[in-house]
Length: 222
Image (cartoon, rainbow, N blue to C red; front, side, top):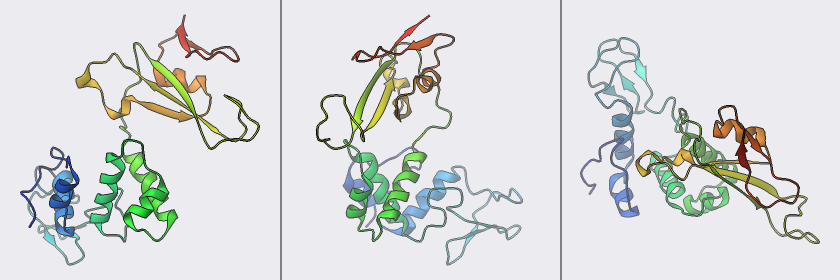
């Protein structure tokens, strides 16, 4: 038996038990998406009528005033999916609850997906959806660090590499806790101080790249 309906956009499962209780059925998932998209009630995209629509066997919403059809998942990461919404919700839970990140192969194994390509596509859709479109640039004190991603390379030591990918990460650690969002942590593959300048919004100042072999973080200068 499902628990009381969570408030869409406010309530998010804190444990897997809550996730399983809230979104155990397809109807529970669809109901959550509907209340998230139309928090003040369904609004017809054609005539603007505000009233509960008819719902077809295919899950399409039909306006009672003008018979316009609206897909519940149009314009979302679920658009055109052939997989159950519950599986998508499980994927979202898995991706957001892993402290050390998730790989496409790991997602494929957990969900039992038959195709690695499907898991890869899902993972990238979810990652893009987690980026805040209106996020502001990092300002104030900025910490920048880098790391190399890839396995050991024979004959290479320390920072010497041929095939590893370098990832640059930047964050503003001094902001008020209430103002910090997941999007305040930025990462990008490859050395690009031009990108760091755009990222940090240095307002006329330029980032000074370290000299060759310098292990220190880039600093801002006049």
